[in-house]
View 1 (tube, helix red, strand yellow):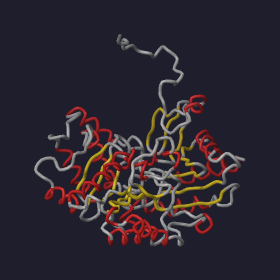
View 2 (cartoon, one colour):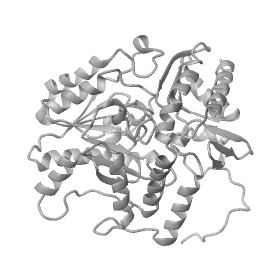
View 3 (tube, helix red, strand yellow):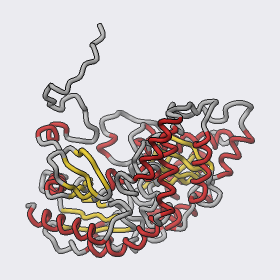
View 4 (tube, helix red, strand yellow):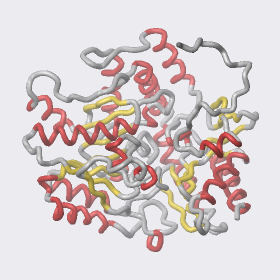
Amino acid sequence: MNKPLTTVESQPNDLSQFWMPFTSNREFKAAPRLLVSAKGMYYKSHDGRDVLDGSAGLWCVNIGHGHPKVVEAIKAQAETLEYAPSFQFSQPLAFDLAQKLAVITPDGMDRIFYTNSGSEAADTALKIALAYHRIRGEGTRTRLIGRERGYHGVGFGGISVGGMVANRKFFGPLINGVDHLPHTHNLAKQAFSRGQPDWGAHLADEMEAMIALHDASNIAAVMIEPVAGSTGVLVPPKGYLERLREITAKHGILLIFDEVITGFGRMGTGFASERFGVKPDIFTMAKGLTSGYVPMGAVAADNNIYDTFMSESPAGIELFHGYTYSAHPLACAAAAATLEVYQEEGLFQRAADMSPYLEEAVHSLKDLPNVIDIRSIGLVGAVELAPRKGAPGARGMEVCIKAYEAGLMIRVSGDVIAMSPPLILEKAHVDEMIEILRNVIKAIE
């Protein structure tokens, strides 16, 4: 028997029905942190306080909250065309957006496949890589290489190639034929680096060991984050990405950059590949694509990869992959408007200009109790705290909660505090963020 649809406004809500992702549901529901509105750099909490957004929501709200241009674009699109399928049909915005993205993607990488999230983009990129090799007659290239501590979303492809243990350990053997490069972080040799650390380029040579073990003829692709974000902001050593590009190109292995976090100004450039001067074969994007206003992701592929699908596939569908909401009209409208905001307000350059100030401010926390490392690059900063004995992550989570109570939203990964504020921030926002963090870290045992 169907339950009648009724209102529940008169009933108390114990928050039990919503199973929250990546959250200690028991802890949260005992003391909820609810956000009820947002504008510019600030959220409004359910108890009426302004909370400075030090993490751009979840690394995504690059243009700040409530930007009228994007809000109006979404409203207008909802009134015009709220949905259109992308299987055998489409709508003009999908093609217009791809053309706009082509202006800022690396040269020769302007073939865009739409998804709904970074997780879907990661799995899409891996499938494109596998299919590409098969179409061109190298079907033995099925092995995928990821990296320890890597994060590529939560699809089975992404967590298989990813290397964050907690994201993998409950879900069985995952997909076969995956191996992992070592991560690039070494506290003893890299602590308190500003920008790219000097030590660690040689770690890219581990790719040669992978090739010696599996043979290049069996390896399809390597997927990494140019800057590893969710694991705690691990910045690539100088020369590391260049060396990895050299090795993969030599052996015909596709290099995939996961730019879900690093894209759209976070590094002070359109994408991290531009900042580091290293061009991948495929890269993923999401988050800043719509500034988080509507869910959307995408994959950009080298034009030669797309051309291979078009020329070598038999007649009919070239890639048997896609999503019901690929190129959703509201998402396309939000993304197109967001790209215009980036350009009109010069936000990529603003991020580049603000980066030195944020770096100096974050590194000013160096001498606080329990601080064992500080990392920074672009408009990202991280403070690593010593873990409590027998309770890793507890100190970081306490800082997160106390900072929120003091008026600041941050991200934590274990005992690493990550800051990735909207690109619209001003020096006063940096000062406010650092003052709150300083007081909270000093007060936490």
